[in-house]
Image 1: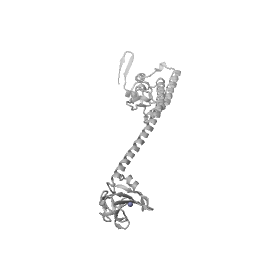
Image 2: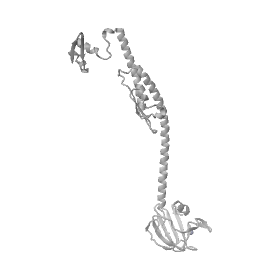
Image 3: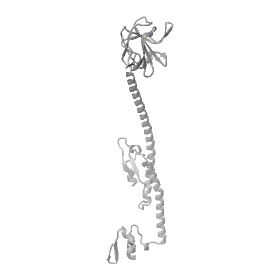
Image 4: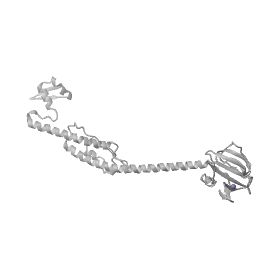
Length: 314
Ligand SMILES: [Zn+2]
């Protein structure tokens, strides 16, 4: 600290720290220091009434700020908690908030459908610089922004709903695609029991009794294939089916081939889809060379046609 005498004035060059060094100052130096503070009103120019008025004015200013600050803080919270104001949606031009509300800042103006982000910071209620004239346009902007936020929110909610619908559609499409792929892969795991042969007799009642299988007309010796990966559970002869083969599939389904001329597998043998298990014949109760194919599920014969069609085998 330095001081020098210039005529009748005593000029004191001060730094903020000097204010604390009151004890080191003379009464006159201290008064000079105080008089240099911003907003200082010389004591001799104030009356007790005037000082009281000044005091009340300061109180009102602080009270107003106390009410404005939470409002601004709420706006900041509303905007800050992820509410994005799309400039196109709200008509809130980038920079307008900045111009009207010094504490608002357009973080990004938004383009190509991207929303704009507006951050609003609540002013320090203790700040002495703010005044009513600044607070009023700020409140107007807050009200406008709040209205815009409401509009933007409803639009965003609609957008979110639309997005959810799209996501659901995408998911269901993906599931359907996956199902289709799985279905295709599943069907690829099967092989037709006989190729180049047509159905000559379907499953159902025939000649007064139940025909429990489906017949394919083919020449003797025509190869017969395992319809899927399976275990040979029967490979033998009986009077009705003649030479026949029964395959038990992994899902428990039993597929039976009857009236064979030759059996080419043994009981207990594992076979892969497409392996040749025997050859077409007319053994057993048969009037001509054909394959009699049965499909059994849960111990009961079922119509082989839909079973074969479902697997792309017919
Ligand atoms: Zn038959």
